Length: 325
Image (cartoon, rainbow, N blue to C red; front, side, top):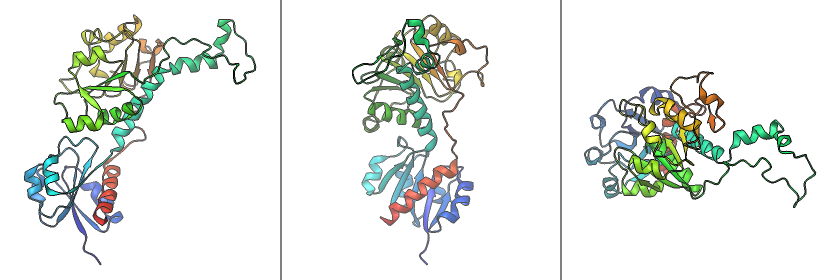
């Protein structure tokens, strides 16, 4: 029987997942770092998996027989890519389920807002055509009741600017999707991405004020910390176009909810798509519940849920294939 190949997981917290997955990958021996992955470095390790852990010259130098490096997530901001290339390593990324799910919801909200989808559905299901003096008639190829409710907010997203606040894994996944839809991506974060990553995600750095002024959609995708608490307040919302929309798939407290509600009520911004709120569940008496230019979700951005077993399992599958290639 062939000797198992040693794989090092550079991030802490994967021990339980590795133990549960061991039977599924009998040809791989997974070692999990606690703090400094160099403590487990040896010439026996042929594969390295890293999420947010730093992979630099020092770590790579301690792994003299390394063949494959896998990044959990697409944004390899924490990887010394030049050092990886100098070593001639096989380098690949494994998309993470969680950020993918949240990015999908963000894109769904953008598209739904662009088609005034909730109000459109309500108008059809309630037979609102009657209030326009219309009556149903048999259609044909050139005989239709095009746009019969005259929704004024319907538009295309192609050519629109998406401003992403926070360019972590979720923001990067969202930028990829928006680029495919023909949108221009701006992003704001404390430390700009490298030119290589900006090219990969088709995104351009902008300071927060510029992003707010130029964006047709502003998507909040940054962690909720002491620094980001209320970072989008009345002054920031005032910079936005009247035709612009807010999408929040991060945490409710990052936006001053009262200031946003006032702007929505006064049509100082066009609308909002919200999956998160200051209080969850969203209180039934919240003014957000009665606004026609808002789409609300019950914090479903994480999709069907994820865990370290799913993430590590996907990485080990790819690692196994790469080592056999």
